[in-house]
Amino acid sequence: MPTPADFQNRPMNRGKWVVVDGPSGSGKDSLLSVLQQRLLEINTPFSYISEEDLDPDRHKILTAAGDRAIAELLVDHRFRIWHKYVYPALMEGRVVLSNRGEPATLAYQTASGEISISQVWEMHRHKGISRPDLVVITVCRPDAALLRREQDQAASGSIRAERRRGNGVGV
Image (tube, rainbow, N blue to C red; front, side, top):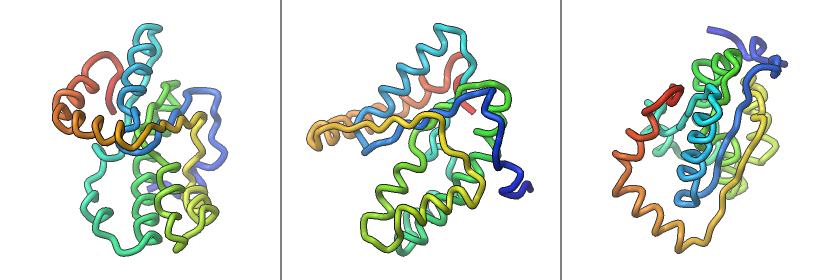
């Protein structure tokens, strides 16, 4: 398995990495669907990555005790995603669209003060995970987010199937 040093200072003259992050129900999936459609229209190769879809240790993360432990598990998971999916796609010249990423950990795991933003940032860099080329943060009113979340849960099976269809979609 490669070490973090293998991924330091990667050449970014190939693909671009876009992370869309924000609270549940704030429009991440909607924005990513529009981006995917536009990339298809201009015949640009891309990959879509959702941390939740790629996480065999989701239960472990959700049941971890403390923000530091959760952050460590998330960063380890992100390194696996980086190594297996993101970096190779970037080197192929693809645009990589990620649903959630480092910004969520910087916000959620640092809220209680158990771990600082700089510590979480350093954890990602220490693993050799590069910064995305673009981060988009979605926001909306809490009542709108709750309504969207309920609607998304009802339609989640069809949304995920739709997202994976088409040229270049999926990992």
